[in-house]
Length: 109
Image (cartoon, rainbow, N blue to C red; front, side, top):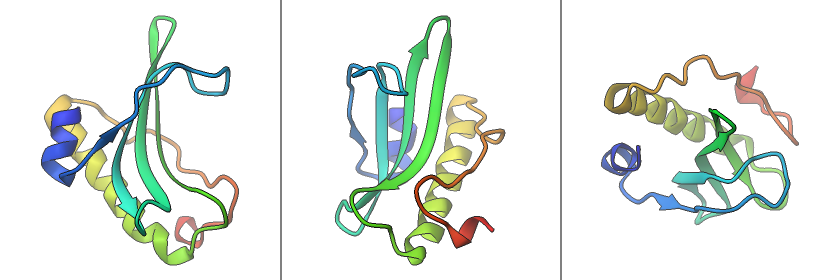
């Protein structure tokens, strides 16, 4: 996965971590698309949950609401990452639900 994302997007940051008890288990986020010098990132989080694997694909920022113009290129990057992972790794992300969290996103309408 790391290799496929790097071949498609170039620089990929990998942030291995241990859960602090939040909603996501121990795992690895792969940050492959950065918007506005790191104000927001598109990431793919992967972590083991018992005998299964949990995956979260998201675009998120720090601080204030992101401009609506930031979402279309992020969503395009997410679609490209999904296609890349399907082809290179056989990982099908097409059934994942898209939802907005924390701010209304006109691009999802």
